Amino acid sequence: MSDAPAPPAAAALPESLRFIERDWLSSNQVVGFAGNAAIVVDTGYAKHAALTVELVRRVLDARERETGGSIRLVGIVNTHLHSDHCGGNRALAHAFGCPITVPAASAADVAAWDEVALTHATTGQRCERFRHAATLAPGETFRLGGLDWRVLAAPGHDPKSLIFHCEREGLLVSADALWEQGFGVIFPELDGHSGFDEQRSVLELIATLPVRLVLPGHGRAFSDVRGALDRAFTRLEALRADPRRHARHALKVLVKFLLLDLERVEATRLVDFLRRATVMQRTAELIGMEFGAALAWAADELVAQGQLRRDGAWLLNA
Image: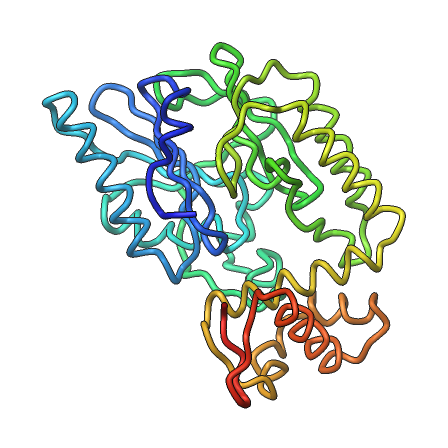
């Protein structure tokens, strides 16, 4: 995947919307235009914040060439506050002087900058502190690209996550609730809370919506909504039937994310980097392994799958 506006999605989108497909360290972005104003949904990971600013600037510049007028970014909206969806908030807000809107359920955590509640610390990830100016809650409607979008709750992957549905155009900004080939890790289950049932409810909700095109948080935009839902339901039931399988998958995802961020790390220092990562530690317990041994197992599995490689004592992203 490349960090660039995605032609397949652009061909099916209204002229007032643009979809920027990113790699798996940063979430995708959706940019909506109304007159000379633009709003962006989600901002990627902190490591690539400067690239997010550049990509959004390119989209704004292209719109200016199309319309002959000046375009301003006037807002940032987050579907949820995992680090790969809000890590560019501060950089974009600084570059364009625009306010940030977050899910109402996360507003207090942002105001206090509680990195445990926001999960940045507990997953071994990072995010530059930002301030929010407004909130969105399920049941509300907001304007993006001159269109009305209904705000829907999407617990499962993240208990506080939102998704956005535009009935008029049959569009769904699905965040990490539905991808073409699945959905995000169900983090509540790693913390001893219910998440599988909530994820199923979200998938069932999506199945009732008129949707012709999904703009996911990761991966390409897609129109085979029924096929994606069938795959997601099948995967969810397999994970529900074997929670340890889900825990093993989650640990590998989190170790891979760390290597996407750091690019290389001494294998023996993985534990040192992740001493605050309590979600990962509890995941190791679910697998039935000591934390260091679980990290070593995850690294071995990722090397065997070609996701990581070894160079002497070092682990490198592949």
